[in-house]
Length: 126
Image (tube, rainbow, N blue to C red; front, side, top):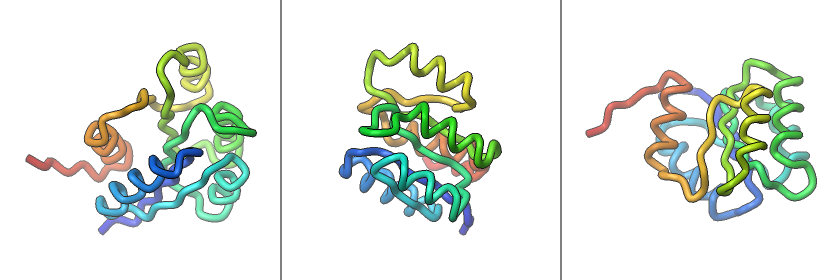
């Protein structure tokens, strides 16, 4: 059992629930936030190892949240989740320190493998 922490930031409840279930079953401690304010409070309080961050969130957008996360702790790994066609934002997110991005609808297995690789919990499941 690892004790790595994953924060899921998305305004869509269904996506948060799905990702929480997937990463909880992988053995991660999971947190969720529907907006930037809650996300940053969780980052401050729990210092997650990795954040799955949606680009388009009402209020504070993904890039703004990403900047704040990196200011608080540059060690936190961030993977962006985007809708199709946000290439300019993806480029900026990468410049701000995001590791990679997934375009919605994403392949949940690909995301699980990517997170496991980033957190060093690579499981070879056949």
